Length: 396
View 1: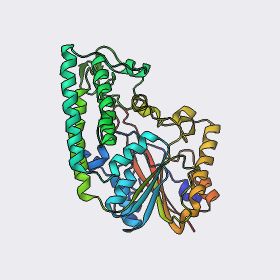
View 2: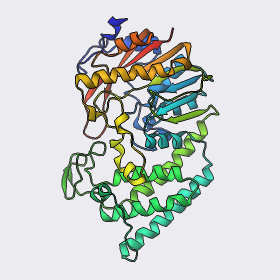
View 3: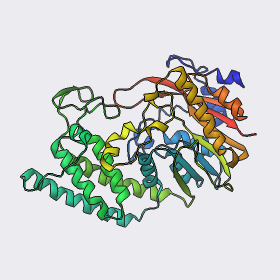
View 4: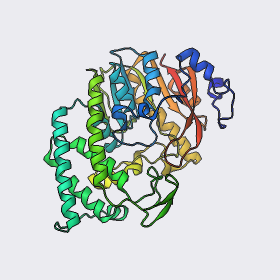
C-alpha cells in the first residue's frame, strides 16, 4: 500500500509516458486524465461557469470516475463541495449527491447551480433588474441621482465610484425579486470583474490599481475598470443561457447541500452513502473565504476563516501540516457511520507532504489505486505545472 503512495511525482512535465502513469489511467479508466483536447467551452459547460472559483476541478474528471465506479440511483458525497462540480455532474448522471461546505457564499453558488428553477420567472427577473440598472446608470452619468452610501472600506478602495454605485443599486433591488439567489450570483460575478485590478490578476489581486498599467494579457497599457453595468449585463444574459442549458440535462436525482464544518456536521443516522468524490484543500494554497472577499463585503455573509482546513493564512509549517492531517482524518471519521461497506472513496490531492498513507492507515481504508494527472494552472498569470493524484480507497 505505502509503495503506491510514494509514487507521486514532484517534478515538471518533462517525463515519459510511463512516468506520467498514462498507461494505468487508460487501462483502468479508458481515459488518460489529461483532457488536453477538451475545449474551454466544455470545461466550463452550462452551470459550471456561473461563477469563477479558484481551485475547482474540471467536470470531465468527475464524470470519468462517477461513470466508472457508480451507477444511477447511487448516493455520492463531496465533503469539500466548493463550487459544486461533483454535485452537478452526479445529478446529470442520475446520482443523488450531498455536498458539505464551510463557506456560506460557496453554498449559495452550489444552490443556484443545482436548483430546479422556474426559468420563465428567472429570465423575467433578470431582465427587469437589468433594465432598472440601465436606467439608474444613465441617470448616474447625467448626475441626476444621489450617491448610495456604504460603510465598507474595502468596497470604496477596490471599486471606482461609478462601478460602486451601480453595484450598490443592483444589490438594493435584489430583494424585490423571487430569483434573488440567482441575481446575487450574477452581481457577485460582475463585482469580481469590476474591481480595480489588472485584467490578468482577477484571482489573486494584491492591491487595487488606480492608474494605467502594462497589461500582460492584452500586451498594452490598460486602465482599471470604471463601470460595473457592462459586466452585469454580460453575466445576466450568460446566466439565463447556462441555466437553460443545465435544465435540459438535469435529472430528478436529489441534491442536498449542507453548510458547515465537515469535521462536525451531523448526517442523518439512516443516510447510506455509496461513495465519496472530493478534493480537500491543498495545504497553504488558498484562503477560500478571502478569494471572494468582494462578495462577503457586499452581501455581509458570515465568515468562518478560522475553521478553514489547510488555508494559506495557516502556512505550511510542521504544525500546520500536522493539524491538516488530523483534520482530514476527523472529516472522514465523522461520516464513517454513513458510508456503506465497500464504499468507493476518491480523493483528489497533491500529496507533496506524503500524508495520505498515514491518513489511510488511521481510517482503516484499503488503498486500491492511485491515478496521476499533470495539471496546468490556467488562472491569469499562474501557469505553474504540477501533478495531482486521484487516490482510490475502499471502505472494507
